[in-house]
Image 1 (cartoon, rainbow, N blue to C red):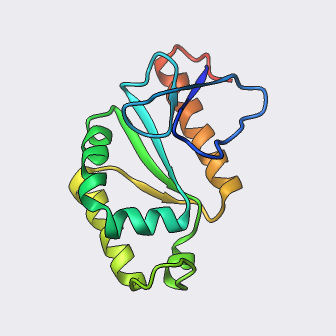
Image 2 (image 1 turned 180 degrees about the vertical axis):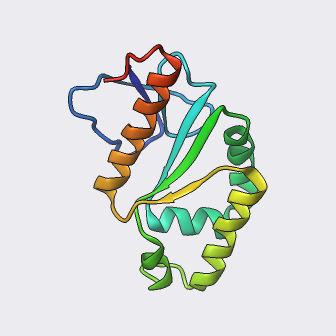
Amino acid sequence: MIIVFDNREKDEYTFGDIVTIKQKLDAGDYSIAGLEDRIAIERKNIDDFVGTVIYHQDRFHEELCALAHMDFAAIVVEASLKDILDHRYKSDVLPLSVIGAAVAIMVEYRVPIIFCGNRQLACHVTLTILQRYASKHEGGIAR
């Protein structure tokens, strides 16, 4: 398995011994080489997530539509729901508004949002999803 990360991704994840390549992805920030049109993971830190789902919904709509047409896609957030509820982000938008926007995305686009708690766990979750998908769709060659 070779992991592809989007060439616009800043501060990309590293995955130990797993080979990664940088290229433009049509949707998401991470995928698997050869399966870029079938699986995508969109990564967000807490401030980016809040800003995107509250203030940039129109721009994010196109990305969500592309993710919704994937075989599997998810949004991985480097924060917990408790971080949202405790207002640990820069925007003054209310926590329940952020949660409402997240629920709307999951229902309307059928794209799960995984609140991972921190960057390290978000990286691990991203890798685990990609490995699981690869093992299912590449004949078990995920490592």
